[in-house]
Image (cartoon, rainbow, N blue to C red; front, side, top):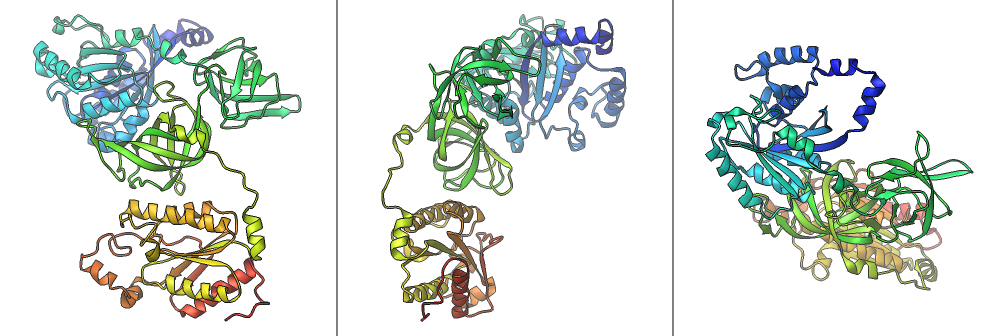
Length: 638
């Protein structure tokens, strides 16, 4: 009986109602390359009678075109939708498929096996209730088996099936199956799995997928379909206190104000008391509103709008919670982080962090250790490369509400976003708050930046000079400070070389150290601005991200980026310190412009090209200040 016949035998509405009453299981298939993940999913779709005649005809035609053997049907082609995947015989992207049986509905994620696509596997695991980890019976446990099992455990997948595939190619050997099972149990014994089932299968031939195979008479467990139909994950989903991140505030008129979102955990009813996690304000639920009318009850996964009995302040990104079990609220926490970018993760560099519906600026302040996903050993690290995993400390621009990931996967997970490309570059799991963050508050001071600057009769500003070594930054900055000093202005010049003799003497010239170098001087510059000073900063500051981080610390017009754009060949000719000669000879590593990058400013306030003298450049800067910030005409320049 196929899907079309199933729908025809009853009305569409009855069929849809029947499907809605079924429970849903989200699972993923993972493992090494060519372990048969796509073939298994294709077999599940085929055995579930969900393929229409035209799909079968297309599959048979494509099988003759792409299959590498004489099989009538290559089931992997049902899932490997990308042409590149069909040509290479591998899965690159995460492919999601829906199928249903009489007992349950399923959404399965087919994840790639290549190590370089580990981030895709993590994406599939992040929303899965169960993982089917495939192992080729001929090859046994591989590094990807270990890696994917570890990531599944880290991401909170608590139900695991070890599918020993291609059992037909080892002559349905019980001894080989037992050997692989023993190896897997040995390395995964420390993982926090709630349930575990090992099944010998042949996705190609159908053994033990939907029907028990007579060729594995020594196996007395369930088929894969039977196990997927029977595993209970509803308890996992409903467990935990009420949490609902606010997606938006619905106010169509003056008489209605509702808070829309999807319930991350727990249950609610009208009359229940809730609180806004960040502010601690409480109220009671008046109504639970949906497009289909009000509800008497709502639980995990329901998208609803709630109205409250009292007018309390809450907005997008806030989290409603059970007052008896409040989430953590902090601006620092420790977390496991999976790095998903080809650009190295550097501590101190600012990123955007999105947790629930809240987006804030965040930096990784410390890498406690990196995890070797092959040996599970902890390794010291100063940065993270693509697909690497580490335990880190993060600092956020403002407090956010969260639960530890092991308690609530929805409110304990976050992503990191690159502020320039807007691409997702990392995924994290919060482990615990750094408690000291909740005990540190801003101290109110009577004398502020405005009063200090007013006493000096000037507007505080940071003049940020950037350019290659030898470009003339320090020379120009020194002249500008002399001119301002002669006008009676209160200034401070921070020079890159001078700062490295004291505040930053512990830093080298790796990318990570350069990021920290700029973070520290930006913080010092902010303090000088609070003191009311005109601060001149002369640092190579090679990365756009760190210059933007510095800019974001200041109010509008308080930060002036000055790009001293001197060609590198001219810098080499000047080479006042002999550094280019050493770098070109290989005696000086990580030198900007030679074997370390310099990212030129995109839109600086002042662009000084190399065709003018230092005095002319200084005049240009002072003219800018006079036109934009100060009235200097009544003061004679030196």
